Length: 93
Image 1 (tube, rainbow, N blue to C red):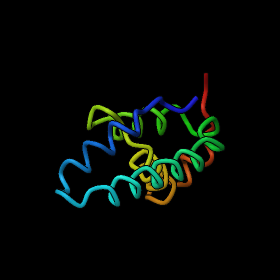
Image 2 (cartoon, helix red, strand yellow; image 1 turned 60 degrees about the horizontal axis):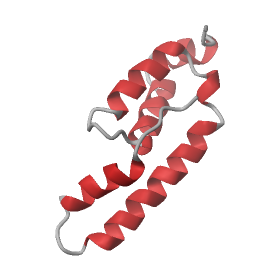
Image 3 (cartoon, helix red, strand yellow; image 1 turned 180 degrees about the horizontal axis):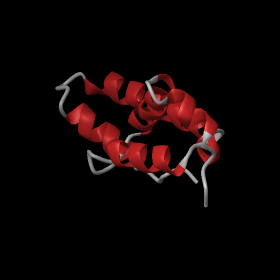
Image 4 (cartoon, rainbow, N blue to C red; image 1 turned 90 degrees about the vertical axis):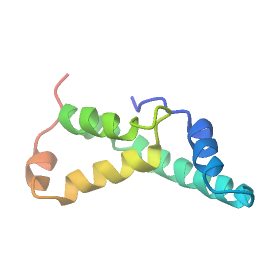
């Protein structure tokens, strides 16, 4: 199961950094979070425990967590030097 991040709180935190014209930024961040969640949902169970654990920690570093960051981490793990190992090693529960 995907980690339960508070996308709304995360987006509010990011928007707070962007100044007075933040409504567009907020909508954009929420769209990105929903898109990332949708892409991760279908493949999360097939990822190794190592990838899930590491990327969950990276994505949660802000406190609220970010599905966009989680998606980026997973994609990097599958395109980096260990990609072949990560794709061939199924998770173990």
